[in-house]
Amino acid sequence: MPRIELTDLPSRSTTHGTDGWSALLDDSPFDKPEVWFEDKPEVSGDLTDVYRGMFNDLAVAVKITRDVGDTDLVEHEASVLAELYPEGTNNEKFYRYLPRLIASTRWEGRRVNILPWFEGFISLEDIRRAYPEGIDFRDMVWMFKRLLVGIGFAHTQDIVHGAILPSHVMVHPLDHGAKIIDWSYAIQHASHKNTYIRAMSRPFQAFYASEILDRRPPTPATDIAMAARIAIALVGGDLETGNLPGSVPTGVQLFLQDCILEDPNRRPQNAWDLHESFDKLLLSIVGKPTYRPFRMP
Image (cartoon, rainbow, N blue to C red):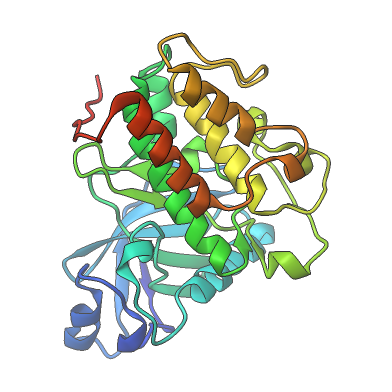
């Protein structure tokens, strides 16, 4: 099994949550901790591979660029995640939706990011493929709401993800947890920059907001539009027209369609406000929320 020596580990004050990392870092018997990982990737993206690895007894995700020329993307993701997790802060309510950077180092000339392994999570793309005709809109609801909370937190840090795609959102079917991954194209200090998303994933082009396709600066409304497009796709809707199946209540259909308007200035601008409005709408349509375990076929 390949191994990577970790040279840039976070301090204890930057390790959040109960995932066991802070204790492991303190108790590690190694002067220079190492991560061992499998020979074959678990997931392959457009430019990177993600391997399952181990640090002591804890599973980790080892993200490596396939081409040395793309190492800047993984470096950028490390910078974004470090900004999302500033030293000395701890806000579990929102951090649980984001991957925490364990370490970022070099291996065989390439940049490598070490992240927690999300056991039991599946991507929304996995769900979309398993249910080509669409899932029950009530299952889509909790997934969409988790997504709004996560991107809303990033927006409070003036960071726009810019690639909210089904393959970049993971959920836990039973616990209803969610993780927004792959921050390689995110824009930091978005409100002060006149820049655009550098690249797109061709297989998911239909999910991108118009301003990304036109190479215009993204805003929080960009992430909101892409999240809504995922919601539409999950229930079997048409991404080109924005039409949703009749099984989805009319109020929910109109709500999602407002989020994907061509002009970003006409879309909702605040993910947390949108989450609150969505809750009110759902209360009037289906009543108080109830737990629904989600199952893959």
